[in-house]
Length: 583
Image 1 (cartoon, one colour):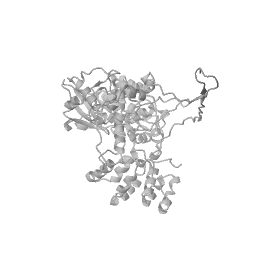
Image 2 (image 1 turned 30 degrees about the vertical axis):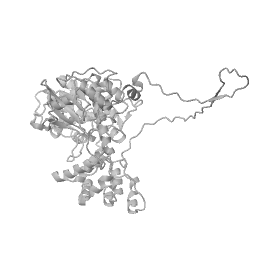
Image 3 (image 1 turned 30 degrees about the horizontal axis):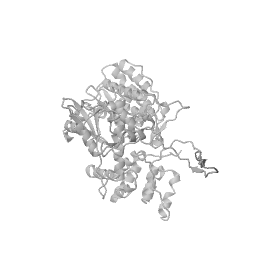
Image 4 (image 1 turned 60 degrees about the horizontal axis):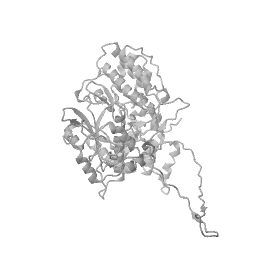
């Protein structure tokens, strides 16, 4: 049966290499990059540096970036058709649906037009069709008030007019309307006066700010020029959620980070840079600075694409602020303060002395490898954090970007979930008869950690986090990355499952894929740790989301594993390894 689609990164390596050779020749890839939706100037520059510094194929990196955005071999075939690369079309034709094969004839016949590949479509929930009702307002004929003059009088014609909408007394019913009425747009002078009235703070964590009241609060979207047009209609819930979080001045943050010194940088992400901050009181914090884009066009103004990216950055930073301020748990990264008044918004977190789980698994900065006991405790703590998000409220919170880089470790190696910029309200996975998972297109995440149902149909449920956590468990057990071009299969779950299907003996499987950096087990719990972690990881990352366990079951298994010697289940998962193109 012909596959419905093939991810570009999952095509045969020999086929991709042939494409790379063709597109690298005479820099053909530079001619096709402008026709690739989602590819920006910075991506092209990155590919150029990739070639100069590593002597690697720029086309390979370009296609990897494009594939991570959800594009498939069908999109690539249409791209080659638009750019008239017939040779490349013929190379990848076996991986393309037959309905697109006619494009080769259209390329050879220049009289017919060829459409550009469009962005991957997101299924939209069906809406009930409403019947249109045409309202006819008839004039109302009224007689004049008691007239003293006898005889018939000429009637007056009064037209019915719609009454102006009333403003709801409950702000939650109409947050956008309420925010516009209650919070007038402040002028620059009022903002300056507001900032000057604040007393000087002694500490970044203990600012002597007056409590925010409904009358004194300033609309968050008006605090800075960069946020003026970037907030959506849900700013009122955000303002309510962060009311218990301390606001700090931009000056205090500059002092804590030594004017954002490069020596204080402890990490970089897609939308910001994280700095180490030293408080006047002697404490240490982590400050995430949401960077803005400086790209401008010929007129000196920012392009629409740059404005769109800045809006997305602001949306994610406010979403993270809202989530972290709302949920407090031992295994969720605590937020201490925030600043939205400077040129760039900043979030202040607890400083995590041991970096990320990814850093420790790769032993970066000459760190000691984790023991099996530590790995079990980190797995359990992370599972507890996710279980809390999924069950604490009636509507579960879906993290959406669970990976080793977003699991942070404090000085006691206590794990804490961070980076909630992609988190969303979702729903628990229901039974087959009642399930209706949320369809979402805003979650981007990291492709290697996203389940098949989300990549193909943008189905969003708590099982998305379960799948991502399963890959994290596989990384903990093996010490390998979630995805590697030099591995066959490239995905870690498929790699582990293939070897598990071949080898039924647990000891042999351990020798094949166990993390060699982990110290040898010293007790029975550590001896069983590998089997428990890899088994639970494979179960959690099954392709069928209905077969994945819930987080409460995962917590139960890991809790038993850390307390006593559990009964290890038989290696029962023998699911067929499907070709990568069927993901």
